[in-house]
Length: 482
Image (cartoon, rainbow, N blue to C red; front, side, top):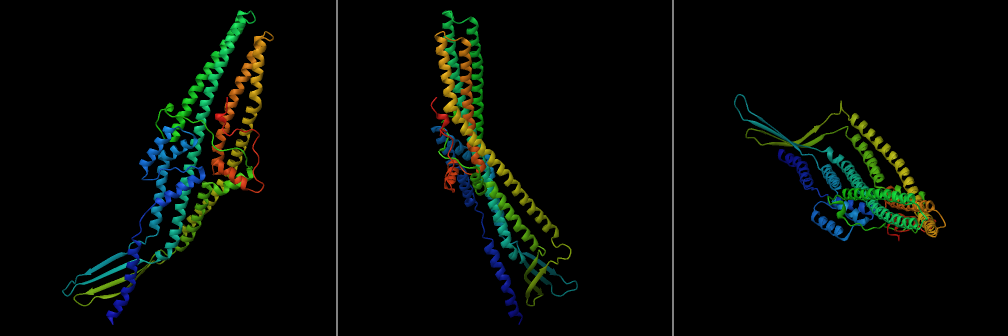
């Protein structure tokens, strides 16, 4: 009878041991999660390039190839995503969250207790041993794993959002560097124009149609222009240095060859309502915040289960002297008399409410960001069109007329000087508008959560199609004919 009871009592511990051994085979492999981060970044930026752990040599070769070919906006973003140590550190957080998810799927180790009795006045010694495992974890494990997977997803989305934000910042730094390069070229051209005016004024002085005061006035303008040109050269150096910093390079600022380009086509526009719809779906920070809310909801449900933390079961063995060992089931149950996890439940509910408030705050901030970015994008495109199609041609024509009239002796020097100033100011203003237009692109992309080409594509798929862009808006202002 004892032997049959012992056999029956051993079935549960054997089954439990099998579960523990199978559970112990779990391993941590974050590579699929790293790949999901890269995929998310590709969706948000349109650029598929990230250095995943273990790909360091490949990433270095890719960076070298990009720098050798010349850096455009896409190339700058690729280098940044491949080089950024901060993003690489953040990426490891995904691996950490995966390790925590694996841990959430593991049972705690069983406990083994033993007792040896030595008789005080002779006789046989006795021994007891208990092997106990916490069976309640089997009931809690699915919810724990669900929460852990939610947190992995939240981390994936958060890291991807940081990488996408770096991409937008790098693209903005690239456009700033290109704009600074263009501005320097414009200022050098302005110096040449003023030099020609100085020559013309000197000729008119020799002909008796201009005075030494006129010549000095032009010479003063030329000196002022040289100061402006020197400042523009410094601005270019600083902009290049900022770009190198964003790209994660220690290369000297003038060691990078920039390819002047603004990607994408502006043949169609997008309404602010449609931009908001896309942002709600695509922004990675909103998705991460929603995952945090879902995780908090599940944590509350788990904490409510934890009023009873331990229900142990296992096998007990007792032996006295040389007699047969007695084997039977053993139980260890926590009595929830004082601690019924009230504080843990309250804490989880507060954290859930906190996550919901953060999501609401983020949604409100996202709406403001999209509206602002959309308005800047539209306004900048319209101003570029106004400068290129109307203001610059008009001021250039006025200058040519004033120069010709002065050359023929029909007007005084001051009219030429005023026309010259207005034309140079118009050129500077145009360069500033080109920069503002270029910077509005990554700002809109970051606010909406998609690259511009995909934003326009999604807008064209919406009912009613897309709104036409301002007439004559250039697709690549920095490469426009001067």
